[in-house]
Length: 180
Image (cartoon, rainbow, N blue to C red):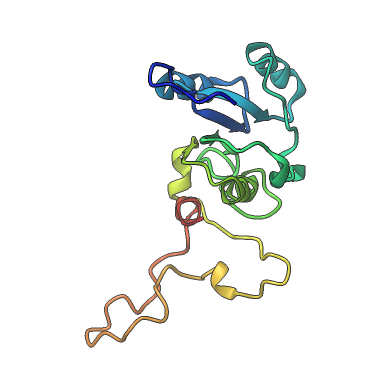
């Protein structure tokens, strides 16, 4: 491989796209970052065909629940808008929990953990601020802190005024996303 000279333009940042849809988020990211989408994940076949038409060199990795992230090319930017039906204020408000469409967030979090991109761009609805979050326990994980009944910190030194020692509110979806 030839060494890059000072006059060569830098290689564009590489983008991986999850829950890609028609590619609106990808277009914005490519424009803002001067980036190039190198792969995507979309299960809706007609929509994936439109995406492939605009990005013919980007392979569709398919169903996010079946992807082996150790085999996926690394990216500089990972983007996606995981399903919102269960966190939308006009939806069921079932929240981020296993078995819901919005619960697919856990697979996006796994992708972020495995790929370690420099940037992550997530798009979703305002309902994330009020929808509850219930996390799936991983196999062999018996840590009950994964699904706290409240958002009160545990294991902190005592406070003579007893501030913050009572339950405040349940974990919200936005908190789970940011925490993950």
